[in-house]
Image (cartoon, rainbow, N blue to C red):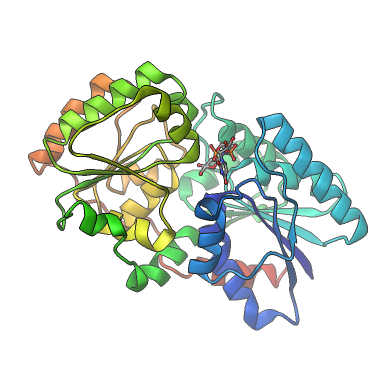
Length: 358
Ligand code: UD1
């Protein structure tokens, strides 16, 4: 079988790493080609993850770079189609919900190449987020779904997808987390800001809904700084957010803005944090497994099990909502949380065993 594995943006890399590792012993049955679309290209957003997670150099880099949603989608489709026409594949495996996920699945499917979606079926039902559109489009043309939760399975059944296409395998991002836990490394910030175990916050913000409007972003950050009650807040800043923050000039003695971190450094910080404040989806899965309290600054989530089972709470995007959640946290009233079924570090193995039956 000739399998294309697609990765384009930061949250894809930790999802493909264990799949590539699990393919090694079956290289005579499945020949894979790793395709990096080039959606993320900075070393801090891409290269470092390949190095730290031991992902081999991509066989092909489509080098599409930044652009609007449509520009990126169009460039990826054009370049991936050209590649497929020259050197076809039998299956195209995409992960997650980024622009590269959707663009490659469309290009492949239009050439009658089967689409495999790892992390299929999750839904926020919020069409203002580009990721939700990417999920809907990708799933609508997917042949095999590898899912992370019972909610995803139900979503797919409700949409009319045949039971035989839905395979509940768990979470490859958690395979990567569990495999690398012993290698987590303190970043420079640990010493620079004299961080102490369970005595600081980690914050990440990059969703357009939170960061694109200067006044709202300022108010959100102000509320978090106030709610932290003097505890340090370490804030690795995504390039998109950095551009906007430059114009606002936010400062507080306990707010430490730093460059995006590598995987091992970021997760070291999360593992030892008092709590995490984020608008990411993937991070809420990692905090669930590490049992670290997590406040999500979004009005919805496509990962409801991180709330019903895990340590995550939806705070929303209204800055006025932050204070009561902070109070609960400081009072020690945060839930302990549990780990969703099959988030056990063996998901990639299950995927490969199943791929061999296709
Ligand atoms: C993408 C994903 C999002 C994911 C996020 C994680 C989509 C629709 N969104 O959003 O789901 O959570 O990655 O990081 O795919 N930039 C750089 N260097 C880079 C890449 C981007 O400076 O290596 C800057 C560019 O100015 C670019 C902006 O960041 O315009 C946004 O990048 P883009 O890939 O469009 O989306 P993200 O916001 O990173």
